Length: 188
Image (tube, rainbow, N blue to C red; front, side):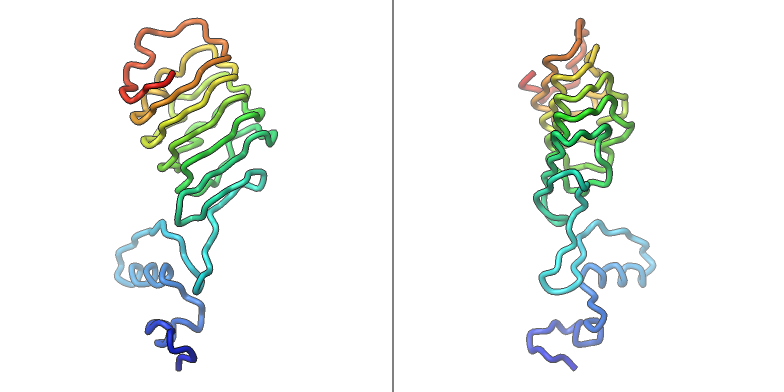
């Protein structure tokens, strides 16, 4: 029997005793139907309780798993790009660290990433698959690194890129076709 008049019917039916939230009910129902679907939804354990988005311990994060997430890892002495970021991360700042190379697929799960700051590190090269899947990326800071060439192929995978900074690198030659696939690019 429900003790509060405003309790939802599903809680009154016996679900509420174990603290099951709507997200868990959907997962249970979909699993029971044999659909085998994985939901990327925030799950609430009860009224007003939200599961926070993952935030690397050395970073500062704003937002939650259900909304846009802003992650600031600048000036933290990092040697690699932090992993385990929330899928809804839209801004990631890893500037002013000691990153020398980007791991393959370092940003693969960040489908909503719009701004990426990699400036003021010691990056020497950008692997071909580094920016794979970042179709929403609009701003990319690669300035003040140790690049010796324009990362032509990785950049060609960024259809929405509007602003790119490459200043203060060791680039001596820029191929004629370096920015050919960047039709949205307006600031270089």
